[in-house]
Length: 290
Image (tube, rainbow, N blue to C red; front, side):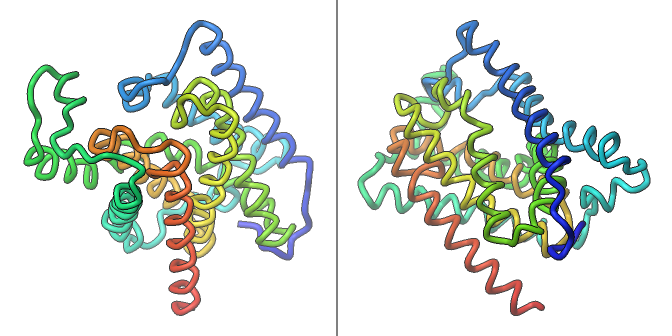
């Protein structure tokens, strides 16, 4: 991974951004033009395979720019994109830490009166045609989302993180950490813009939703950035991203189906505050470890 004292090279950064945005917005724009929407819980919690495939566009763009523009050989990809597994400790820590973060987000959302609470998940029961109940939710669905969910979502989270954390983060670090985090977070948030306009995460709030998505990406991205830089591993970032997606698009959406899109839940202001607090805790622990 290039260090912060290296010279900033705008060419590879611009090439990566242009390829990533053009390919992603092109695919999503075409599908939205043909009627794609995310205005209900069903469409938001069960994304199509093409949407999961889109998550690999940043990773593929990073590989292309690294190989052909930066002229890095295949053997140099591990160093160039931080393709290291690293210590197993943070992976196991994430299995508990990220679900606790989501529990805090939705607990605060409920306490603030920004959502109701449906532990029996009536909406999901109606969709499945049979009652689920809180016992199944807490004893089956939640444990599966903690243990199995991250492994399934890792395959797609890694596609994004090869690009954002493996490629772009170290190449922005010569600008200084605050500027690198700011630029990366804003780009990552804007990259989601077509889906936000189609109702993803913020139904009925397209423009405010894009702004909030940028704030979420800044807050959650700062946590991912700190972990990536400390452990020098974009693979870890992909796992953390997958673990978060397993929680964010799983049980919590059904137990708190009417959370305020801009203020509550994982994608609202409360989510921003919890991720910011977790980032501050991470920075403190990392400094102590050093």
